[in-house]
Length: 330
Image (cartoon, rainbow, N blue to C red):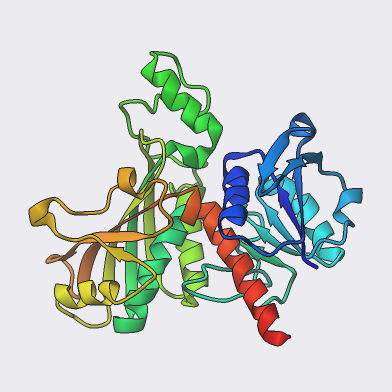
């Protein structure tokens, strides 16, 4: 018997999690959906039945759950994830609440596996997830000594509020969620600014990359930009390797891997785009070229669906990792 909970079931990511649980036929004997009081009572179709969304309370964390998919924001996770953990569940948390805790696993299944010092596993930042998948391939093949990120992040990364602000701008209305209009604009501002000029989003990418790759001394920098795209993040990576392979060697590494899809034929206008990545589960890479201004350095362009691989899908893949590991122990 496997009993599973989804917290934040009515949000953008929570709904994607439920869709993926059904699509991938995750072997859960019982699925319980939780949300805030405002959304409690909503009906959600799931497989051959209808699930009723329940309000999450402290008492309900003692419900005999084996696994919990948590996508309800940092403050909710800080309160409820340890309670679920205390009652024996393994929590896969989509917020930033526990990512840099040294006892908490930060997992991208194509890159690393949970060690389970604690019963909480953190899902990384959406842009980090799609970046470390190809980075791990380069690390294994050539060694990585430095990476500089520039992100182009869709408004769905801000949830429904971001999508609504994009629609408001198209109608000529003022934004509510963002400090400036996002329609016909680009904001070099995601999350709050620290005193050193970096935003928390940028620092998340930097710190999480080091932790996931197990390279605490890796040189990483980032600039994160919100763009007027509804769904699908893009990341321009400038990567310095330990050797100087030909571009064709990088392409072959990506071509040989099931972790990414290579789209790199500029002569025929073939390259990854958020538009074509949206709705897809894969991480797409292309525009691979040598950077002549730095030794051993290369440009790699990466796109992925931020609600799927960048959030819900990665969490469900972690759940699959755990279920497969438990099956192997039986």
